[in-house]
Length: 467
Picture 1: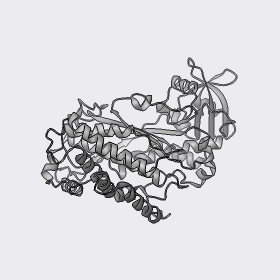
Picture 2: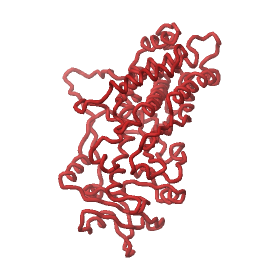
Picture 3: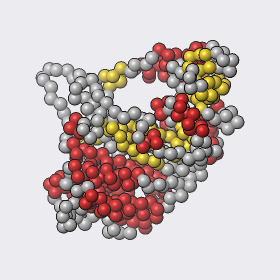
């Protein structure tokens, strides 16, 4: 279990001692008399944007002043560049190496496994000037998608431990890099979407003693117990009942034995799924550059909205009337209802990214300078990781995981942590006092709109399923 002392120790190591060691290696500091040295700059940006995600240079200057360094806004601005980006990236990598978890009383369903891991990522679009460092995956125009960053994270639903965030080029596949190669403990459950799996990898996970659970693709080919080959649409179309729980073999060449679980949904839910799968959506591209920027247009011109039409294959539309899963777990270990509950639990990593983007604003910045943008992304990811550490010691042991709102964790703890890490005041007593006040004063009103993050039990059906 990670205590306040362990979290504060990790923060002291990463944000103070390691930042001091890296300031010379990255070229951020060349003179020993520099006021904004490595630790001060790292803490200023991390806690400044943790408290105010759209903080200006003037606001960052005030954070630096709270750390005992008096500089002008221009001095803060001048510290951003290739060296600052290198420094924050190295510090982020150091923080990723910290292993912190909780001894939360996990429900019986999660306790069956040596960890229940969910994993997902996001793409952050970057300015085209960074294409040599962070290559993108292209777009509809020559300038679109030249540079982007893929960020992935892995969350253990049982003990709250987080691996990552891992960074890679936007054009890199999900099944590549550190995010894919990070080992999993024997006896764990790896609960991810189908994009993380191939039949070969499913077999490898099973041989390594790991369980896995994922959704089935609409184009899946399978062989039933009689040796007949089916496509998934035809196989489900031949079923007369509302539930399917059979052993099948996937792939004509790989021949991987798996368990196929499917449950028919109601007509209304199936229709909602089909409408959602084919609707046109209007929105912005992933990675928001400079909020509040207004584009000029000629008088009388109507605003052209960016609309994106979802392209869904015919086979996919035909299977939307079913919830379909494949796994290597036996019926004795996991029932159909429990499998569906675990499939819903995968949504927690999506909520984590929602928290980081909507509140932490990791994909939003005020500047147009490429390396200032990179520095800000690294600092905000580091702040989100610190917030997760605080979540472990504050609300992961609560039965519903939602007693402390993540927004208050971010906004209330940032100034306290900034003072403590800088050594102005002892960190542990202040965190204890602030944490206790948060635990008693931040209970969530059921009618209040809140960021749905880390709500491991947020649904009556889920509560019953987790048992």
